[in-house]
Length: 189
Image (cartoon, rainbow, N blue to C red; front, side, top):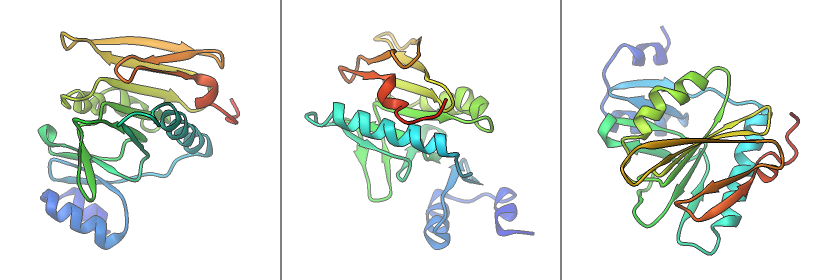
């Protein structure tokens, strides 16, 4: 039985999880004592993610917010969870630690067939527990199409969608606009 298979059948504390990641030099997601290996992505997935980091970084360069890619894990204490969003934006109310962050204002996931239902369902449920989170953005990897969920002042999530290379996303909490043409630059759709 592989070590990962054993991990799926045992409870591990988050300290043991962090030690395992460091020892194996491998990324795993952690959820309430269970550990899951991270799958690799496609070329388009990587390109959309990279374009998103660049576009957000350029738009926020004169702000106190910072954009990070999928190398830094997010801790969601309410759910006893560590995961690796494709993109996160951290602002003044976010917390930064050596190996993880908490409290992003924006989380972006690039959808893939194998994780789309999880990204829309359980993962979004977990992200909604982050008090600082204002925007959850889903980007399709094979066409210029974005789905944006924005938390209103009364805590409700409002859905909007933008499509086509001429489309422009408005991230109101960050006070920026993102053209889909920048997010999908050089992506073959």
